[in-house]
Image (cartoon, rainbow, N blue to C red; front, side, top):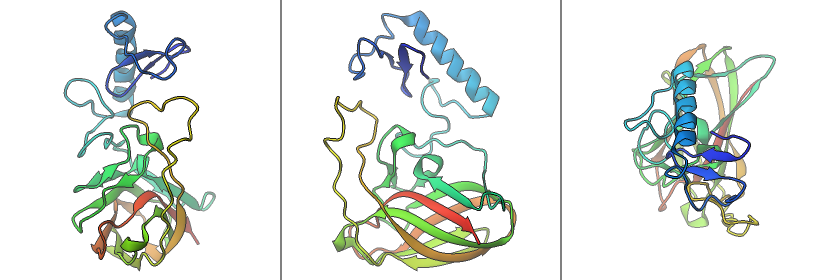
Amino acid sequence: MRTQTHRLDNGGNLFDMIADPGQTAPIQAKQPDLAKELMNAVAAWRKELGIATPAGGKGKGKVANGPGSGVDPRPLAIGYREFPITMLPARDGEPRGEMRRSSKAPNSSYFVNWTKPTDSAVWNIEVVTAGTYIVTLDYACAAADVGSKLELSFEGTLLKGKVSEAFDSPLKLEQDTITRPDGESVMRDFRTMTLGEVRLEPGKGELRLRATDIPGKSVMDLRRVTMTLK
């Protein structure tokens, strides 16, 4: 939540963006009335959208399994003929198992720590139009980790593929002119790979991406899944 001069982060910390643009010194103890006003505004917004507030009244909606893993419970619509391309970024998905976001701030995050077959990335979707969808992934993967076998599932339909090329991009540790606040992700570049094509029927459910075989230490860092209606 932001105003022209202040920002309230996911943890309930209030910052003066004029005096402290790097967000290094929380001031909610000094300005409790403003902090309360912004927290009440966030609570009202959550109530309007039907997003649960975790215990303590802070955070990013429903907490799944770690920092920043909360997601909006409403399904993401895919497959409109007028808009055949739907991007499903990590910020809108839910990491399960030991998979995690790269940061507490969902908007700039990607999925990391994908190391086990029990880990998965899940999006709550609604398929609007029956048809064949081209599925691509934006990913980064070390050469030593190439070869993981992937499985995308939705309501009993499966698409299988394999990570066949490495793309081990470096972290952009010097991309900012000021110190990046805690909770925001360090970025890196991602490559697009085609997982394959899958036939989907209309309906609501979980779109789940997991690895069935992991020959290296990790599957990949995952930025997003893109579904394109043919």
